[in-house]
Image 1 (cartoon, rainbow, N blue to C red):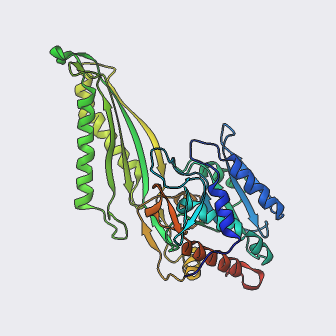
Image 2: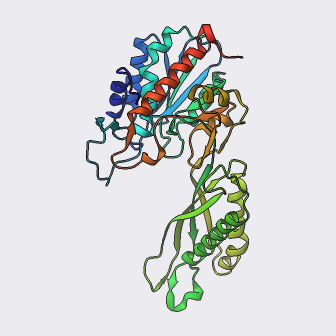
Image 3: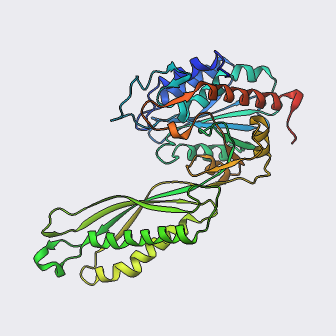
Length: 393
């Protein structure tokens, strides 16, 4: 079994040591990476959030006058609250051929391999550059990558393609579903339940819309459209939370529910949301307004990321397939930042070490063999992009 190089494990362990749970600042980690790269002679640009508490980092190894291959990953991790860990989640622990710690699978091992091998990449005299793009707040809706992409556009920097290192077992993925998460606030009119015809029951109005969402889910499951590369093979919709009412004898004035679509990349997410809104406003709202003119629905997007569908014949698909020795790129149902890079004009694939099955769980881990395979991929990429063996332009 292959084992990681001594240069990468310490780097991964250092990154695990930063508690970059999405609610926290990631600046300590980002500044560490910036200083590390600066010591190698590599300049970094930081793109901050509005409050200045978080930042994306963009750096280029090799020539800066031409587009290169972007290696991208997020720095934030999900909370460990109320999880039963057997080790300190923010201290990397090695054992049984694994590395344990929050972010080992999702996705600091990929970042650590990129950084740990940066000195070696620089020694190769790259003809085509390698860009590092490390983002914040991916776990709460791919928030940070958006201002990074905007900054790249303003700077007229467009990498020729992108590899997002989310855990895929080092198998290239060229397509994933998109997501739209929505909160709906229903406004009714409270009254005593003994005279309920004087009020508007917000919970019942919400229930009608939720029932319609369920009918959409049944329709997708039965009629498609289908893409057997995904599991499930159709667009899915579910309601995740419902809150409403204050007492049994009071007609509820407010109800809030949250739902999401996980849609095939060929689907139009706005059309899905519009269908729900249209049902609420045309089939449910008129009866509510007969009693209260202020009754209604308010819709709020909670999170969204674009679906990914990169052409099977795209250069980046062939390149990553060759470097990982996988002839065919797959599809997954979980989402990543890759769809946003793709939408910005950068053909993208997802390929990184570890398993999504270990992400977000207590005692999260990555197999050391996966780290070694990622090292092989990054080394081969550096060799392919070197002056001696530049990829076909």
